[in-house]
Image (cartoon, rainbow, N blue to C red; front, side, top):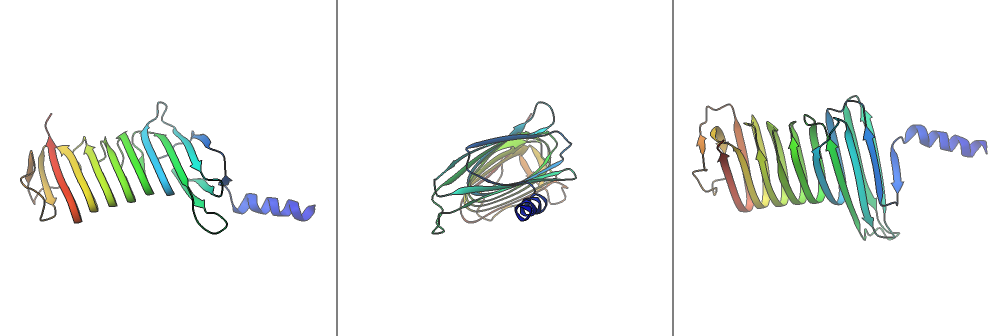
Length: 229
């Protein structure tokens, strides 16, 4: 009995925030101030980010997992950073049958986002902090007043609008369609040679402090548009 109790205490201390879950739905709220959110999700993921009504972080996670798979989820708060990591175990043969995870994130508007997803669709609505996005395959759509964007996708599409004049946009795509919309104006643009110029309402000025660095290495379309008004 004492040995079993010691093991439980050990796991509670060493593995805080670790869930090996089978249920389809989980939600939680972080009321303490969070300035940075890191999401690292393996498997097939859908991520939807929008603004919360109270300035707190609200997380709703839904799953669709095959009977021989299990989701392992870890969450931790360190200072003002919330980190969520999720991955799936496979069957006894080590084969992952199905692991679909859907995260709905309601966040403060000025939060910095670090989103690393393996496959799937990500949408972002109205955030105003720095954005870092990484994905192997899928789609990123949305808008925000982000100032700094660092986006990388191997296969898929990126359609994003920065409603504020960005200080820095860095976007890399291997195969797919890339469409960026920013306020009309002068930018230090570094784009792939095959990009069709001139960019609408964009004045390319190497002396500008606002830099746009975009590249599609293997193939696809690239469009940068300056929005007026």
